[in-house]
Image 1 (cartoon, helix red, strand yellow):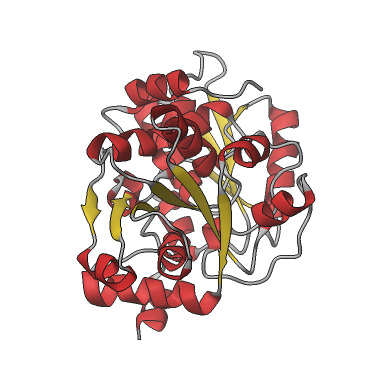
Image 2: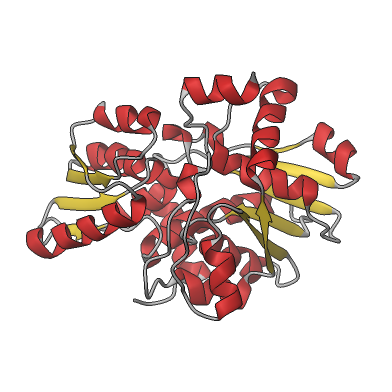
Length: 315
């Protein structure tokens, strides 16, 4: 699998235009005052399907050849929703594997599309293994949520937009799960401005990339429960995202469940914006991290949270 370049990311942008939205980059007066920094929020929560994952899904599916017309993926929710949306737009048949623990709000959103939805395995890791087995059996085009050069290129378009809108950004904070977003953002941002810092943010309950950094290789972790469900799970062995992140990412911060919940509630109460736990991880890191840069961008990755969980956290 080749490593994507900024030219690949520019090409991906051309393919996703018309399906993925150019989302706002807005200065947060509340967070800027509270952190004594200049904080800008990239509001991917306003993306079609409610998540940045649409970008990578469209970048990948737009390259599917006439034959086969079947695509297959595994997802904790948002990537599956993006694949379902794009498959419908492109006239593809999609099979989406989700773990039994997936957010009910995300699963029900996927069910609104004409896809083959399979719930398999108690955890994301088990669902991913099941999906890889199905790939070998079916021969369908597999669209990994993160371990795919075309998906990574699609996610990198977020950084292109951020640095076009605010060229003076000195750092970008990115939520990290499998690493597709941070890999794409790092490639694009460092190509446009080699001095910009790229920081990852992970829930302390599932520090897969942080532990890989420490070990110098992808390692299996024992994850704990987190409301940042989109970031939970292990990184697939051999994933292209790890070597990219190891080279281009400047640091990774871990945030507690308490901090994630506080950041989510703060956005709801003060900014009147509903976001999901995974998006709140980067916000929490922006508040708690001791980074030196003054002008920072924070990627608010999605809004797909169940109403019951949202009410519990905000209440």
